[in-house]
Image (cartoon, rainbow, N blue to C red; front, top):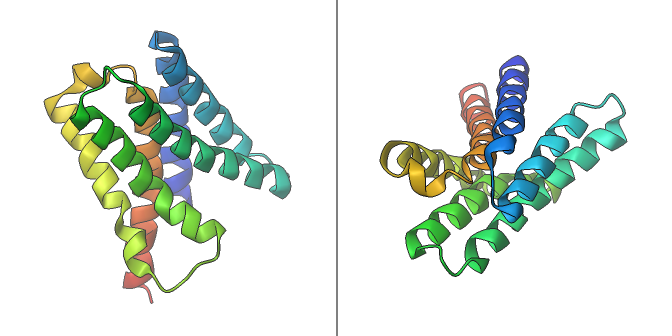
Length: 156
């Protein structure tokens, strides 16, 4: 599982790095680049630095929500999808960082984020072309959390 997560997160970070050069919206570009940096930091050898990358990545989820609701020219659907994907992806991280237990259902919220990303890819990719980089990184994170939750149930 750890190798799968490692490879998936690295690939999403590389995609975000490459795609970051195509983004024209400044706010979306900042979010994308900081998420790429956070992924890079999270693979540092120093455990304290590694945790900082994790916190930075989680913070970017919250910034995506601000981004989604702050743009007046975004449709309601776009605002809801961006904020929803980000919220569903960050919820397990917040519960993990806060050491809050007892809410196993939170571990499955990333499934909604993955579903939102698939919907965007299948139905409306042009509307989200500025956000595809960071949405890919969010979805990779969601996949790793979801697979971890499923494996935790299967092997417990």
